[in-house]
Image (cartoon, rainbow, N blue to C red; front, side, top):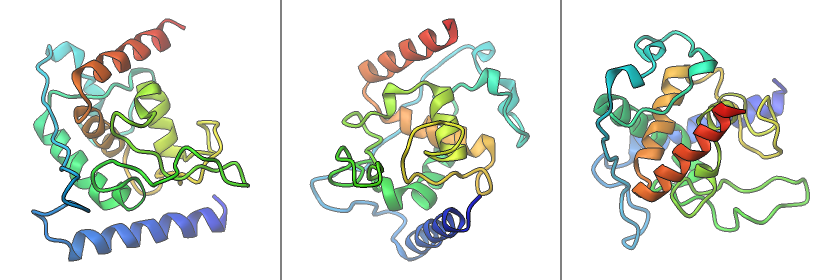
Length: 186
């Protein structure tokens, strides 16, 4: 990890911790017109849940699956998102203005994680690797997204991504599930 990337990740962590420490835990709105995303729980069969996430060990990358049926996991994901991700991606998952315009270094600003962005266009596995290794890491693409490999456990990454997915409308979730199915078939 380069010194600049490490410095960037530490800076984001400090900003996120400062925000969560000084903010009112019941008020996460940046402006009145934005509403706080709410997770939606989905019932599923126990065999559909990866047993690899029942402890804090590393996730078996052949079974990366977001989980929408565990309230504790989603609540933990929301807490972690507010601490580590909201600084760039917005407290309401709205992203940064101009996120879809590339700068001179082929970077993009932090995209929204709500249904208006492109997060749901990526498989669970791709989202996991982008979060763990960063935008220019093992995930491949070019972006300023830092990797969280040294900051979050695999289980915490899954919980954040599960929280994000839980806020999407049902139709977007179904499209995302289809993308996952196509990725598995390859």
